[in-house]
Length: 140
Image 1: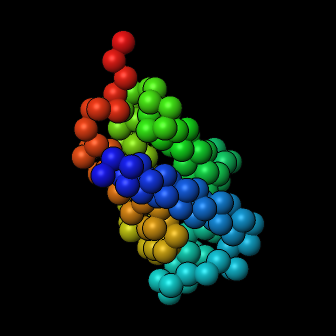
Image 2: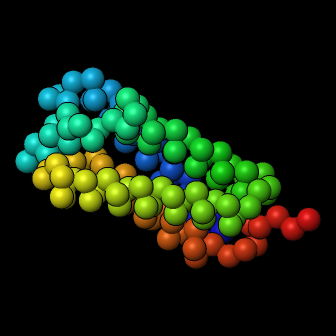
Image 3: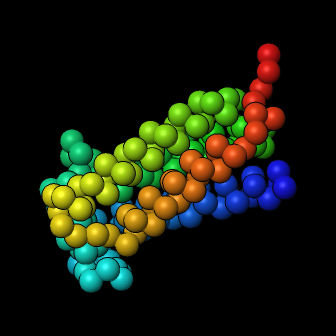
Protein backbone atom coordinates (compact mmCIF):
# COMPACT_ATOMS: atom_id res chain seq x y z
CA UNK A 1 0.00 0.00 0.00
CA UNK A 2 2.79 2.39 0.92
CA UNK A 3 4.52 1.89 -2.47
CA UNK A 4 1.24 2.42 -4.35
CA UNK A 5 0.57 5.62 -2.41
CA UNK A 6 4.07 6.92 -3.11
CA UNK A 7 3.74 6.16 -6.83
CA UNK A 8 0.33 7.81 -6.97
CA UNK A 9 1.64 10.95 -5.23
CA UNK A 10 4.56 11.10 -7.69
CA UNK A 11 2.19 10.62 -10.64
CA UNK A 12 -0.08 13.40 -9.40
CA UNK A 13 2.82 15.82 -8.90
CA UNK A 14 4.23 15.08 -12.36
CA UNK A 15 0.76 15.52 -13.87
CA UNK A 16 0.41 18.88 -12.14
CA UNK A 17 3.82 19.92 -13.42
CA UNK A 18 2.79 18.94 -16.96
CA UNK A 19 -0.41 21.02 -16.68
CA UNK A 20 1.56 24.02 -15.43
CA UNK A 21 4.16 23.71 -18.20
CA UNK A 22 1.35 23.51 -20.77
CA UNK A 23 -0.17 26.69 -19.33
CA UNK A 24 3.20 28.48 -19.42
CA UNK A 25 3.33 27.92 -23.18
CA UNK A 26 -0.32 28.88 -23.63
CA UNK A 27 0.05 32.18 -21.77
CA UNK A 28 2.11 33.33 -24.75
CA UNK A 29 -0.95 32.85 -27.00
CA UNK A 30 -4.07 32.24 -24.87
CA UNK A 31 -6.25 31.84 -27.95
CA UNK A 32 -4.43 28.58 -28.76
CA UNK A 33 -5.32 26.84 -25.49
CA UNK A 34 -7.53 23.76 -25.70
CA UNK A 35 -10.42 24.25 -23.29
CA UNK A 36 -13.57 22.25 -22.68
CA UNK A 37 -15.43 24.86 -20.61
CA UNK A 38 -16.67 27.05 -23.43
CA UNK A 39 -13.47 28.99 -24.05
CA UNK A 40 -13.00 30.03 -20.44
CA UNK A 41 -9.32 29.13 -20.51
CA UNK A 42 -8.53 31.87 -23.00
CA UNK A 43 -10.41 34.40 -20.87
CA UNK A 44 -8.63 33.33 -17.69
CA UNK A 45 -5.14 33.19 -19.26
CA UNK A 46 -5.51 36.63 -20.83
CA UNK A 47 -7.02 38.28 -17.72
CA UNK A 48 -5.20 40.76 -15.53
CA UNK A 49 -5.12 38.05 -12.86
CA UNK A 50 -2.96 35.70 -14.96
CA UNK A 51 0.14 37.44 -13.58
CA UNK A 52 1.20 38.40 -10.10
CA UNK A 53 3.86 41.07 -9.94
CA UNK A 54 4.64 40.47 -13.60
CA UNK A 55 5.15 36.72 -13.09
CA UNK A 56 2.78 34.31 -14.80
CA UNK A 57 0.68 32.27 -12.39
CA UNK A 58 1.52 29.28 -14.61
CA UNK A 59 5.25 29.78 -13.84
CA UNK A 60 4.38 29.87 -10.15
CA UNK A 61 2.61 26.55 -10.69
CA UNK A 62 5.70 25.08 -12.32
CA UNK A 63 7.83 26.22 -9.38
CA UNK A 64 5.30 24.89 -6.85
CA UNK A 65 5.13 21.46 -8.49
CA UNK A 66 8.94 21.20 -8.81
CA UNK A 67 9.30 21.95 -5.10
CA UNK A 68 6.51 19.46 -4.39
CA UNK A 69 8.42 16.78 -6.30
CA UNK A 70 11.55 17.62 -4.29
CA UNK A 71 9.54 17.15 -1.08
CA UNK A 72 8.18 13.84 -2.38
CA UNK A 73 11.69 12.68 -3.20
CA UNK A 74 13.02 13.66 0.21
CA UNK A 75 10.17 12.22 2.27
CA UNK A 76 9.05 9.14 0.36
CA UNK A 77 12.18 8.04 -1.51
CA UNK A 78 15.18 9.27 0.51
CA UNK A 79 13.24 8.94 3.80
CA UNK A 80 14.43 12.34 4.98
CA UNK A 81 12.53 15.51 5.70
CA UNK A 82 9.33 16.34 7.45
CA UNK A 83 5.85 15.18 6.50
CA UNK A 84 4.49 18.07 8.57
CA UNK A 85 6.38 20.65 6.50
CA UNK A 86 5.20 18.89 3.33
CA UNK A 87 1.60 19.11 4.54
CA UNK A 88 2.09 22.82 5.25
CA UNK A 89 3.47 23.28 1.69
CA UNK A 90 0.44 21.47 0.28
CA UNK A 91 -1.88 23.62 2.40
CA UNK A 92 -0.33 26.74 0.88
CA UNK A 93 -0.88 25.29 -2.60
CA UNK A 94 -4.48 24.36 -1.81
CA UNK A 95 -5.35 27.79 -0.44
CA UNK A 96 -3.69 29.52 -3.40
CA UNK A 97 -5.57 27.27 -5.84
CA UNK A 98 -8.85 28.06 -4.06
CA UNK A 99 -7.98 31.77 -4.23
CA UNK A 100 -7.50 31.41 -8.00
CA UNK A 101 -10.84 29.59 -8.23
CA UNK A 102 -12.42 32.51 -6.40
CA UNK A 103 -10.91 34.91 -8.92
CA UNK A 104 -12.33 32.81 -11.76
CA UNK A 105 -15.78 32.77 -10.16
CA UNK A 106 -16.11 36.32 -8.88
CA UNK A 107 -13.73 38.51 -10.89
CA UNK A 108 -13.02 36.86 -14.24
CA UNK A 109 -16.42 35.12 -14.61
CA UNK A 110 -14.84 32.28 -16.59
CA UNK A 111 -13.30 28.93 -15.72
CA UNK A 112 -10.16 27.32 -17.06
CA UNK A 113 -10.30 23.53 -17.39
CA UNK A 114 -6.54 23.29 -16.88
CA UNK A 115 -6.63 25.47 -13.77
CA UNK A 116 -9.43 23.36 -12.31
CA UNK A 117 -7.43 20.24 -13.13
CA UNK A 118 -4.49 21.65 -11.19
CA UNK A 119 -6.81 22.46 -8.26
CA UNK A 120 -8.05 18.86 -8.23
CA UNK A 121 -4.45 17.58 -8.31
CA UNK A 122 -3.46 19.85 -5.41
CA UNK A 123 -6.55 18.78 -3.43
CA UNK A 124 -5.72 15.11 -4.03
CA UNK A 125 -2.10 15.63 -2.98
CA UNK A 126 -3.27 17.43 0.16
CA UNK A 127 -5.76 14.66 1.00
CA UNK A 128 -3.22 11.90 0.41
CA UNK A 129 -0.74 13.68 2.67
CA UNK A 130 -3.34 13.60 5.44
CA UNK A 131 -3.98 9.87 5.10
CA UNK A 132 -0.25 9.17 4.98
CA UNK A 133 0.82 8.07 8.42
CA UNK A 134 3.75 9.57 10.24
CA UNK A 135 5.90 6.56 9.38
CA UNK A 136 7.57 8.72 6.73
CA UNK A 137 8.48 11.26 9.39
CA UNK A 138 12.16 11.31 10.18
CA UNK A 139 12.93 10.99 13.88
CA UNK A 140 16.21 12.36 15.14
